[in-house]
Image 1 (cartoon, one colour):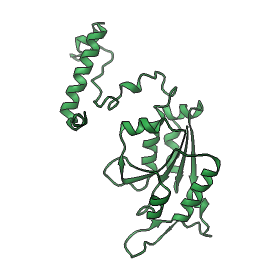
Image 2 (cartoon, one colour):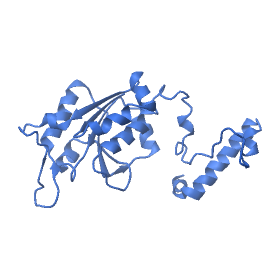
Image 3 (cartoon, one colour):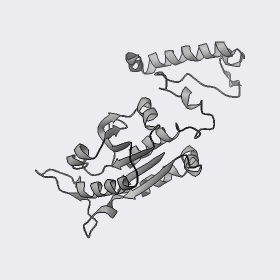
Image 4 (cartoon, one colour):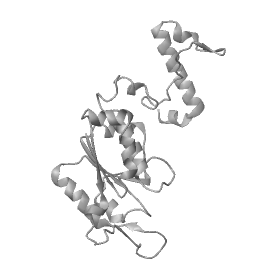
Length: 226
């Protein structure tokens, strides 16, 4: 997979890709991640990429020309499965969407800033709009990092145990069950006996039951979709 990220602040994105699972995925060539400074595609001597909104109002708007120039340059080299704009009013990111995107070969992520982008970018250039939650960030970089992490960990071979991702919360529409590790007894706080019984079928049945109970208690809305 190749991910191209268009941004005004590539330095905000570097750290999340330099550690842990994502770094290992990049080092092992399972994924390529490239940052593109939008100002490099400005035709203005000041490398301007924003301007005042037509009709007045507070804030600045990212201009269509440098965005179009950057996307067009990338498209000369390859075909993209998706061109995604990170925006608070986009489709809410969930596990199903992450699963879908992890199957793509090439995607572009556009990080917004200021009051957002010229609407013509959204109408003519973007294929999907994604939000990581009902709140506003200073820019799309952190949202892009979250989206990338959720996708990259699903690529075959990235996780040491490929079955691990299949037991994550939301993969089956439920929250994950409680998990425990050593010591079995700590300050009188004990691990449920069923988990140390060695009876695999009963352990799996317990996990399914606990997953359902946790979901009913914490996120009953997930069960509405079943």
